[in-house]
Length: 68
Figure 1: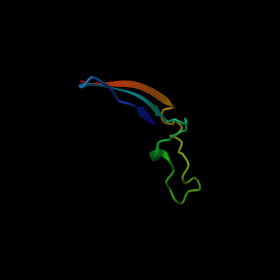
Figure 2: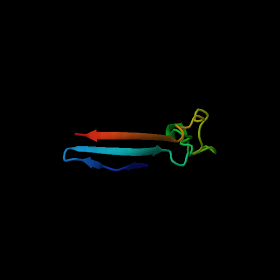
Figure 3: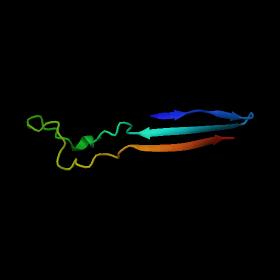
Figure 4: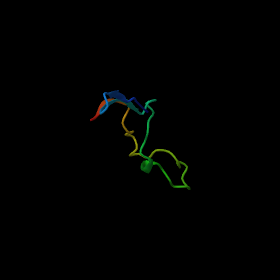
């Protein structure tokens, strides 16, 4: 999710502060290549033994972009 707004200073200078959130609800996002894809297996669709490391947790980023 990203929130940004542009502010004008004079005719030639713009500032765009931004606020970004990744994984807003802090859900576990496992690597999709590590899931069991064997249709004949009872464990089909479950994370495999090497999928115990989920992707990064929630992170927040602030930034400012200046155009002149």
